[in-house]
Amino acid sequence: MAGKWRWNSAQLAERKWWQLYLKNKDVSAYLNWKVSYWKQLLASCKDLVIKPDDRILDAGCGPAGVFMCFPNHDTVVAFDPLLEAYENDLPHFKKTMYPNVQFVQCGIEDFQWPGLFSKVFCMNAINHVRDIQLSFSRLCSMTSPGGQLIVTIDAHNHGLFKHLFRMLPGDILHPHQFDLEEYKNMITQHGLKLIDVLHLKHEFFFDHYALIAEKPLFNS
Image 1 (cartoon, helix red, strand yellow):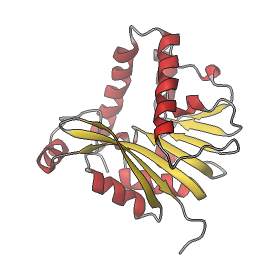
Image 2: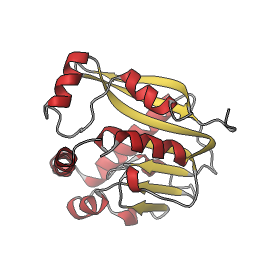
Image 3: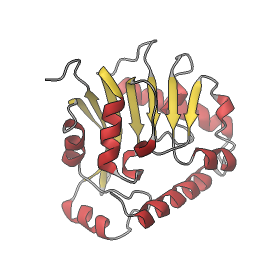
Image 4: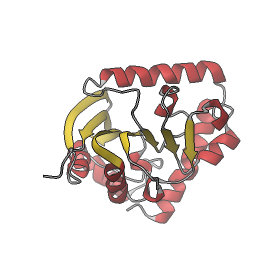
């Protein structure tokens, strides 16, 4: 679990990051680019098949999450602890832009919904949470039997820097610092089967991955 001070600081930094990042970006141009980015990423996930009747959950959606890609789905739910701040701060995000999406302001640890979801997305968000073990447990429990969990992560490449970043606020936006194997284990320990690991981008400290896991139809 991230310390309360570290998580609160990360949330403040996240809000400020989006303000600065979008400050000079044209609204229409940015949103069109973002939808294209998500569609390309989803298309690269060969084991991911989106069906018209899928129930979609976007966990930790931010102001321009993957929820943007599903305007024709009946059930699309997106949540984030900073949704009201994004709507107040950014012309790039207004809930009314997405009439089929049900938005909820909360974190993964606190999210509740009356049904399960056949596609659960957590894109670039899992290392922003307060309690990462609880968050993975919640994501897996919200995935319906036969459904898929899709998580994108920044995973440490070097053990030394991973431990240094845990001790020092070298990456203030991200309270949690893990490598690829640790992230994979946090999914599989909840009974999901990892079916694909996509290497999306290489950088010195972190590599960016998409992890796709499937929940068995029946408990073994």
